Image 1 (cartoon, one colour):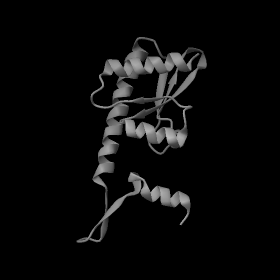
Image 2 (cartoon, rainbow, N blue to C red):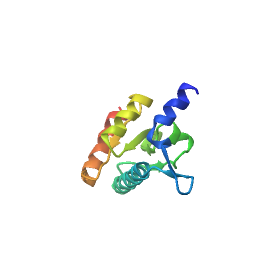
Image 3 (cartoon, one colour):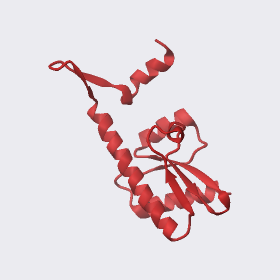
Image 4 (cartoon, helix red, strand yellow):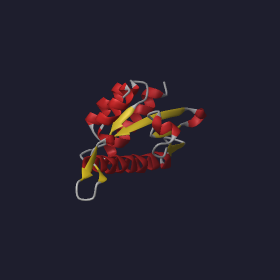
Length: 136
């Protein structure tokens, strides 16, 4: 088994449990919950981006679908500013996810962590901070 496949099996994404009664695979509940948290985080960021778009702080944004070309390269959202400036953004729902992301993709793409305790105002502040630091 190759090194990549060994790492893949260790990943929470590929952990499976076999139901002895049915002999079928059941997806790990932890993985499903993590997916839901990630989707909620993305929805909250999109709401905040819509507000920033309404205030004309950004031109537009694109949320890339799961498993798309950009998503596989570590980009969840691309923010468009005036003058054709594009800022990639990754959204994480936990600090653990941030750490794993940084190990895999490095420091190039800005990341914001959106967990349930963070308010929408804090999310907007994080986005504006990313925009100001990336657009320089």
